[in-house]
Amino acid sequence: MIRTLAVTQDGMLEMDVPFEQLEDERIDWYWVDYEAATQEERLTLDTHFHFHPLAIEDCVHFLQRPKLDHYDETHFFVLHAMNDVTLEANEVDLFLNSRFIVTFHLEPNAEIEEAWSRFTQQPGLRKQGPLHAAYMVMDKLVDQYFPSVHRIEDELNEIEFRSGSKINDIMDQVFKLRSDLLKLRRTIVPMRDLLYRVVNSQRIEGLKSQMVYFQDIYDHLLKLSEMIESNRELTADLRDNYLSISSNRMNHIMKTLTVITVIFMPLTFIAGVYGMNFDWMPELEWSFGYPLIVGLMAALGLGMFTWFKRKGWFE
Image (cartoon, rainbow, N blue to C red; front, side, top):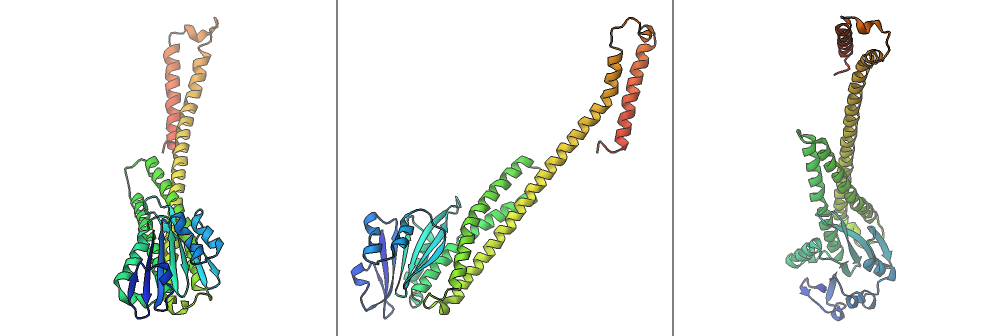
């Protein structure tokens, strides 16, 4: 589907203007949006707009890393929208010129729809031109990152104060959140680098007058990056604490088993000696032999248990 939005020289808005009329002198600037375009509709990127073949290839193949390429007077942006359920990135391509903005996306995009609606409903925005439209698209895409980051942050805060839950269940959630943070990082950090290039670019016409808007997006991405790194450090601390607790528990178990083994070693030795089937063992025929040996074994075991307890081996 292709839709068009054109702003005339006198600030009037015209919708669904045919491609042939977009170059009329009465048109100040226009916005063309490609949504899930067919193969025939994609051809107009070349036949009508004459975009660079590499830019067109980036639009229709694979998921590209966020980037900015300059082709003569047209600037090509690869942006990432985020699925707030799966946290997977969806590519949004944007062509920017002093006279037009063209957006291309293979799936419906709520952020572009919101920016489109604002331009149709607020006449004051139409005078800002295509660069401001590009800003609005980027701003809406970046704003959509915040809910996912805040959700993960809230879950981590809940984990810190949770008690009574099984440690394995908690760690399963921590590792899942760490995986989600990695997905977010793969999207947000490249977008941050892209906006850094934008605010430092000398080739985008009219950028100086709009710099404060793009700087605001860059600040948001810096904040998101810091939140992600902080949360990743928190998950790493929780993971290390889990490993430390597991190691300490294992050491305690091994120490307990070792104490029990050491206590039973002399008792086993005594039982082994008197379990030998020799005829000439005088203690076997002694009437007090059995209670004496049992008492000796009990005293020996109790003594060793008391000594280990005083040493703190059972703490």
